Length: 384
Length: 49
Image (cartoon, rainbow over all chains, first blue to last red; front, top):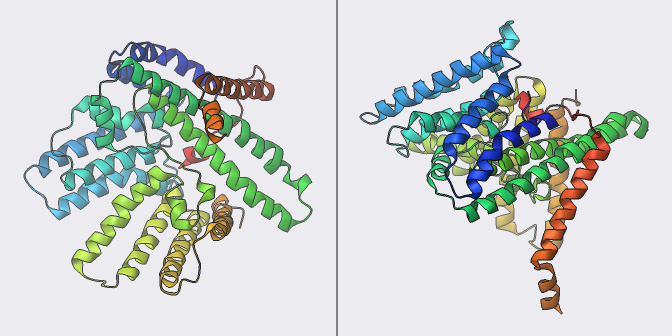
């Protein structure tokens, strides 16, 4: 069953989470019950595919063993090669699931949510390397973090230390009431985004474009805007469901979107769109690349270094979506926009060519919106 | 004037009513669009990644 994909799923959730809500309103602890709900929910989600259920189980054992062994190792040593090996091994199942289908008929490695579970596992290894995680993690807590069902299929990607803090906090009945209101509000917004607006855009606009557009150019132009809005309402709707259900379970999963279509430049956009993923790439790819290159002193020009970091980040992000040309091109396009904006920002700092006022702010939003939509048009695969 | 306007919108009962109408509208729209059928809005784009 697809998470949040049908009304039946929500009815099942309402029944499963009723005891959580009652316990929460009475100010009682509910995380043990929620762990039980997670097991049940995962069984329901993966019941239709035994192959995926087995892949998920093996993947989880793989990640847990890797994390536990690396934490144990890191207590006494801090070798570079072991760290790189641990990261590669953590990413390996995801890489195999992405690459294998292109070269063979093997499809049993992948399962729903493999990417987001990998991001969590790799993050734990990196934070252990940084000394941010020093103690052994309780197995139940580690499993709960990795397999937390509200965010299993497409995130948002939570951070372990933030998640663990939520588990430790004692929530009073009054505090839970606020979480419940906020959670319900997000779930309703999810319905509005995904089931009403997203559905309407797809069925009454995108699917009817052949009757609306008068020329191929018009068709592509309308598709570009329609698909951009559809992608937002689809993904933001899912995120609202995932975050809302997390709130009902006493976990404040991070936000994924913050009005991305009012971004005033591409940098601003990546701080508003799929935030948990872009922050993950920023922290664990971009920052590490900059740190590593600075340490090795291979490139001394900071601007060049920053641009190379963006190219690496967005190329990786593109490839993560898939090895199809449209995703690689999408990554390169975003990297190009970032590098171009970086250069423009430096130029403008010197020459004050683009003044900062309300009018230019609005113009910047309009220009950025069109560049973003063209990016999604590439992403959609309609360009070829 | 501005204070009265502010007080009006920070009224708890009004906020409650606004939220009630908002939720009701969403439920009504869902009912008009899907009736008693289960949703057929398809999977999520990002589930494929």
